Length: 525
Image (cartoon, rainbow, N blue to C red; front, side, top):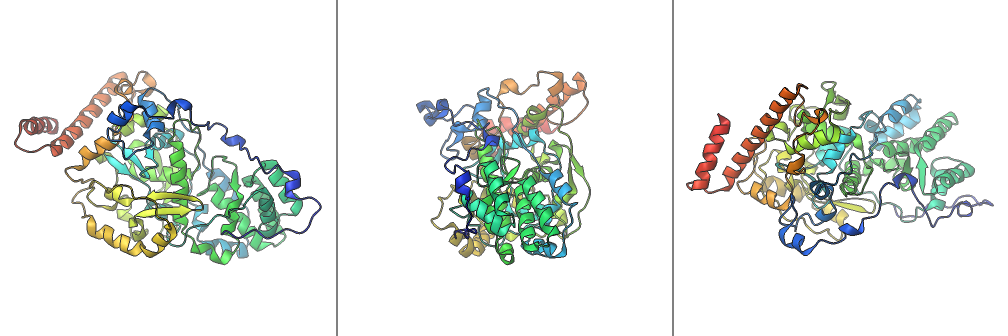
């Protein structure tokens, strides 16, 4: 909403009297430095020949010069990102009673399931390894065999929040003064409490702990509508709008809950994706040190699609009324941490990937056809491309060379509302169903190799150098003999897949084709 927040009661002291609204530093984000001067320009050689280990055709990944993948190939390693999950906060907050009137509004909002589908621990190495492969230009992870992404269907299935509805318009004037007014008007805080909170934060944000304390007081005084708004603001601040501060939520999101009758009108799944996509894009830049976005969503998505490459706790089948994320429990990271995950991703084979993990559970979690929409999604002032045609294998389709990333339309909302149905119908008509998982057209891999970076580690770092990082691609025996055999098996499997891919790229009945055919037969034997 772009309407002004209603004025507060006249007080002798205003928020502007106690705050300097011209500066809102965020101490928690101080680790993220400005872009360094040495990465400001691409030299002529990069423009002509691409990047070592990266794309040779640079028209797609136009921001690759600043990407972590480039720095890794050049020997620069920032280590794991700082990530956090608020699962324990949500678990503890669930112990606070929810009066029936408040529960009614939470149910009506369509967000109730966010309070149950979460992890209590984030695997920083696992998440960081995937973030290093995310590209803002395509809104997708670039893996050895092609692109994958988090779809609207993933969000709807894992979190049970709706993709249908309108996009969120953030207020343009949510400064510190209006944050005080909003807390007083809509959250039920006293004027003094609101002023003190914003003065403490020095920005238009509220601490999650402050919201929890406020909620407890509101339900004791029967201020149920204010309590519901406070609960919902805390809920989205811990989940789909969790930011880099890890302790606060932006005041602008209050506007989502001013009219509690209208909460269900928003496309919550789109909002979650836009916020996560945007933070993944920031996290892929080489000098970023911490990550925002809903880590439980990202980590559960990894659990679903890459079960062989991480440790996960499986609680078994989930009832239809619960989000599928409830199935998973976080476990401790694998030995070797981030570097081990990087090697596992570089060594991925198609057989290691589950492109359509929900097929056996569609009776409980129906497929969301709107996830085949192609265009742009928006949340507030942030817009991101959403391009399922780049990840057709996740829809059981044959992956072909996708169209160029389309330009952003002048009116994203109009395109979303008016072309959604035709976009889905076009998707179904254009892209044939695959005959086996992971199927691609004959020309896809040659194209993908030219525009992306199938591997992220240079050859000099592929072989582990210490006993603590010997298991490169799959957990196995810890002895050096077994570890060496694991590495050889991994290389053989990887070489076999590459040989088969190369065979698909050359014309039959020539010498190269015959050599590759013989090589494939040797590996298959």
